[in-house]
Amino acid sequence: MVLATDTGYPPLPLNDDPVPTEERSDDDIDECEKGVKDLKNSVIGLEFFLQDRKDFKIYCPHTKWKQPKLEEYKKDPKSYLPKGCKSEKI
Figure 1 (spheres, helix red, strand yellow):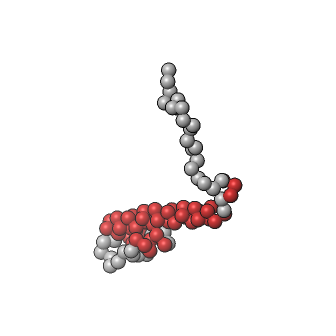
Figure 2: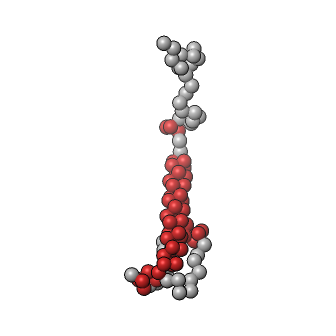
Figure 3: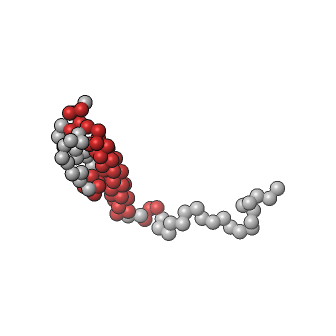
């Protein structure tokens, strides 16, 4: 039986990273952690943005409110509904 790996050529390296693991700097780790935090804030901010839009239509459509831009939610992920908006209907 001939296997697909029996080509006669040496196997390709699995890790194409030219920098050995031991030589990676702490800056790479810090950059990765910042990227993860930014991604997390973006996702949570989007969830709050969409939930606020939905909750506003359900609980307080009579109240005058201009929803902040998505970028504001991403900077500081939280609900921006007017105070008492959800408690009026509940």
